[in-house]
Image 1 (tube, rainbow, N blue to C red):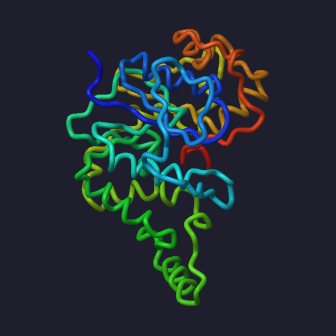
Image 2: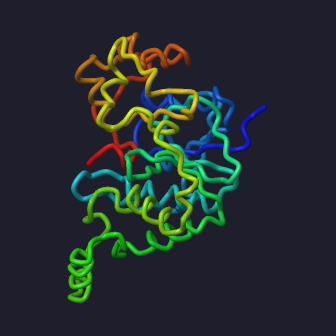
Length: 286
């Protein structure tokens, strides 16, 4: 019997590498109907994944990139909120989120803390009547909106810039302004934070400890438990690490190496690119 919720992801630019192939295949193997949205098509999509046109969610995309990092995460944030608004019984997943077991939710909420006081949207489910979802859609509708969680001094500075005809664009604001910072703020403001799961559910290995994922023989039993639905692989940083430290192929005794074997994914067939334009997660950068 397949899970009640389908999952959907977005990929922008280039072929899928074995890392994204592994993550998407993990959802298929767990029984989820898995959708991959793309605008230009892609290659190396695992069997069982439905490829759909991203224009169904956001037509004629103007892919906004964060000024400091060049990441398209702002567009990715907007895309996932629009997708949750328009699609039924669907959970957003980043292409570097690995599925440990089928996603189950009785409320439609499916999100978790990544850090002590921050909820990440790398895996995100919100019901259509969610006040948080409505607030996120309203907030991201204005690229010059001043984040209500900023300090009084910072809000005053941004208001002054707007008053002079030079409002500050979201792309020039701190990293995650449409992502985890906004999600955390509005979940708390609406009280829907009560549905947020602990980090072990979706981010059992933290960003700061991500090297454990490629460490041969690492004991992750204290991190990944029966309560873990997904493991975030921090693709933006993991791809170059695997390329530079391991010659592009994870060690067989590392967690990622073991997962590749489990799902029958050969890392030599779909190698990591020298450079990727893939959609990244907010947690992948500081």
